[in-house]
Amino acid sequence: MIHEQLEQQKDRLNHQAHHDALTGLPNRVLFVDRVYQAIKVSKRDKSKIAILFIDLDRFKEINDTLGHSVGDKVLIEIAGRLKNNIRHVDTVARLGGDEFTLILPNLNHASSVMEIAQKLVDTLAKKIISGENELYVTASIGISLYPDDGDNTEVLLRNADSAMYQAKNEGRNNYQFYTQQLTEQALNVPY
Image (cartoon, rainbow, N blue to C red; front, side, top):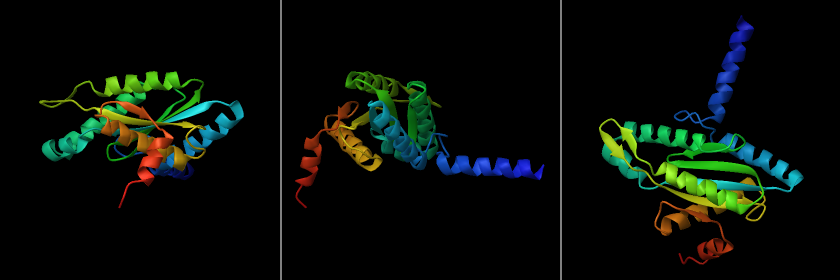
């Protein structure tokens, strides 16, 4: 009996350490591990991986005007939409705030990433009903590819994040692929 309770408590603590408390999605720790594992498989299989960095457009305005409880409901709804629109081999994680990431392993063509990204942009833009409020939340998505845009989690995530900012600069509610030009632009910004 005590052994079972200890095992359950251990499992609960392990889940809490690797999952976001609000959405139940994997957190940054588990995300990093899954990217590492995906890279190992990709090297062996000679396939590509896409990392999608998703930031909700103008989410702060929802939190500031309608309150954090409405913001939390929006985040839970967005998490559900993301989970329902990926393959079983993909991983969606919440890094914090209104930032989500996806790992799309076993890719052969960039065109499949474009299809998934567009589907996510369209799905996330559908209205959300929260009490008496009809909310429209859009997303900016940045995409980096392994091995083209980096060979480790940190570089891939940083490059996807740069591409996400490019998506915001291009008017939000869209996706952009990482390019080396984004890094060059960032390095040439005067202080």
